[in-house]
Length: 276
Ligand SMILES: [Zn+2]
Image 1 (tube, rainbow, N blue to C red):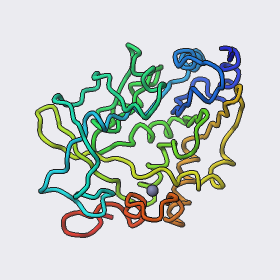
Image 2 (image 1 turned 135 degrees about the vertical axis):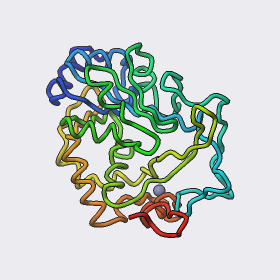
Image 3 (image 1 turned 180 degrees about the vertical axis):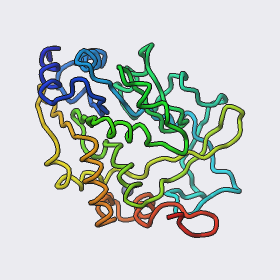
Image 4 (image 1 turned 30 degrees about the vertical axis):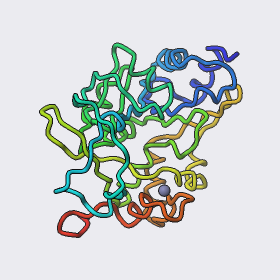
């Protein structure tokens, strides 16, 4: 049994009080039942603002329009990922989230005071005193604005029982290192198809461990390891490491299309060149 006091002590020792905190959590990692609401309430009781990815690609992604298919975009247009888009477009109060993100984002989204970004595929959601400020500037063409806000406010990235392959912020470091983000498609409120930025393959991110682990403060709660990374310093270190060696984020699959296309700089525009 993990007590609320244990959770509170770990969060306090990791200096999360009164900060925005981007949380990636495996509730199973504790080895004993911990309710997502208990974890969330504990963080909020310290004055923290809790930010989570609340992605919804399976629900709102649509097929690439034939007339707008950039090359080097991490996608095989002949064999695209299956989509089963809903009839209605994404809204910030749709309540839908990708099941693969686990339980905790659903707990955050269920709060009546949740604030959610305006990105149909890769939104972020937040609760707490800074929630609106973190997510209100997110747009389909500005997917990682909540992470920029997190860094600007000296926030933390908290990994609870998960690895660096879950650290979404590294996608912003990829962008800052010079890569363009992949584009996917969704419908806007009028039903028109619009482009939306998304991240690439994250399975190679644990290779940044030698660069990032020295930045983390670590505590154990039961069998769950908590790692708290300062967002600003972590972004700077990851950006520098990727800029110095673009191959450092490549996953273990030697023919991973996403990794190859991201390493090469990301999507080309229709003139056949990179925008930067
Ligand atoms: Zn990959």
